[in-house]
Image 1 (tube, helix red, strand yellow):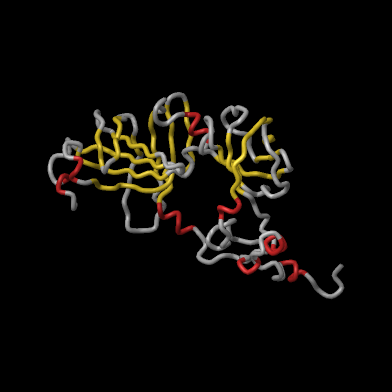
Image 2 (image 1 turned 180 degrees about the horizontal axis):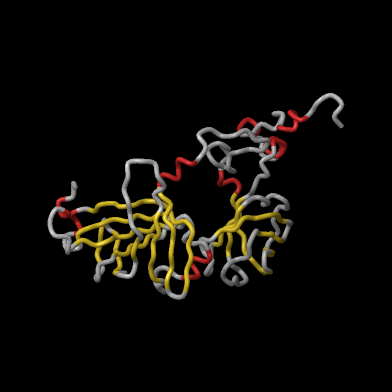
Length: 272
């Protein structure tokens, strides 16, 4: 091995974990019995946090594994797992010498957190390895609707033009009432992000809206008080007509609305 600290006795070797959430929060843990700082990140002692077996290979086999650990009030909480804060968080598992942490580390696995389950004071998470990226299609398939995400590089629109900040006056399950009027029918297929309160950083897909209310795909996970600020991102139904008339962006439409579909193959003389 290239790491000199692995050549001798392994009594000072410990596991390290680095977790990066989508909202920017980064946490570190170690199987050592004391806190250690590695690469500028404080790894808190969590001896009960262990991975399943890790196997390195040169093939293309699935490299997923499972991570088991304890739920703590200050780090990984059950309500954060349930609300989706840890969805698709980046996880790095490595070995390091706790007696000389500046000597470097040996990375064992890198990927994203997949399915997470918890029971009592423990949780279990699946690590989705990098080889899963090979399952993505090599080229895009044809589709009548636009395949670009709204305001991404393929769409080409400036996202800042379609973001709005508002405040909430009432929440009734999936219905959110705003304190000020909004433009009707522009936030459908868009997204809501909470800026205040216990839901800060969480997002929800918007199904539809009128001048004063939003209908979201799921209600907020935590209670919402009057005056809570939210960020609203307009949406697009991915139709060519919408792209051309509402956004004047038909040149960047990423779809084939006039391409004959599979039903053309079923047509024959005399068919109804």
